[in-house]
Image (tube, rainbow, N blue to C red; front, side):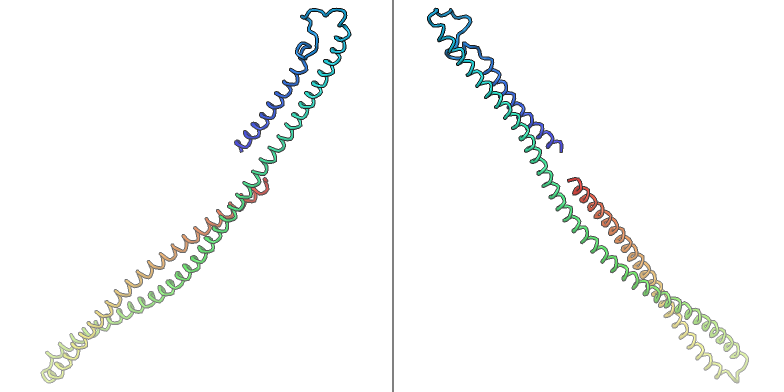
Amino acid sequence: MAKINIFIILMISLVHLHAYKLAQSSSDLVTLSDSDIPGCDNENEKPEPETNKKCTVRMDASCKMKASCIAQKAAKEAKDASDAQVEAGEAAARQVKQQLAEKAQAAAKAAEAALAGKQQIVEQLESEIREGELVVQEETTLLQTTQNTYCAAGQAAKQADVQLKTLTQAVKNAQDNVFNSEHVANGAQQELSEKQQLVEAAKKRVELLLKQLEVARMDFKNTKMAAEKAACAAQEARQRASRERRRAELQHRLRQQIGLAF
């Protein structure tokens, strides 16, 4: 804007200078002495003889007419220069306004293109948010399933532990019964062997359940971390979409303000 103002001032100054030179030239022509016009008398010249007096009078009238014509021509040139100055100033102003309008239109087109790009980014981010929300929903469902499995495995481990204690007590009772009666020694030994097998099977089952419980815990932990990451990603996508939307709206308002200004 400052460069445009300087350009206008420079154009007006040039027009003023041209008008001043024309006026100065006209003034010089009007103020010419009679000695500068051929055929006119000069005060410093010697008077002509009496016989040439009539001729001198005719020459003075001719000089005055020429000076009057020159003055009128100079006045017309000064007026034309003044009119040209006004027209040049108006033309310069129109040219500047046209340039400003073209720049404003170019800026508006650029703003519209930027707005379209930002709108595309916003739509893409919104699509990513929807996908992220679906992932969060799926991970949440999987997390709930894993948690249920974890609880069931814990309950089964507790039941197996109770069974192990019961079987251990039964083995102990059977061992006591072996010492009480020789009559039932073989039967007690067989029962003891069966109980021991049951105990070993119960131990193996407990170990298996404990391993399953550990796996379920790790799966629960990993699923929980994945769900938290998905939730964070969705939150970041929402924030980016919100920032891009606000930026697009701000650019749109600026474009409208630029259009109203011009």
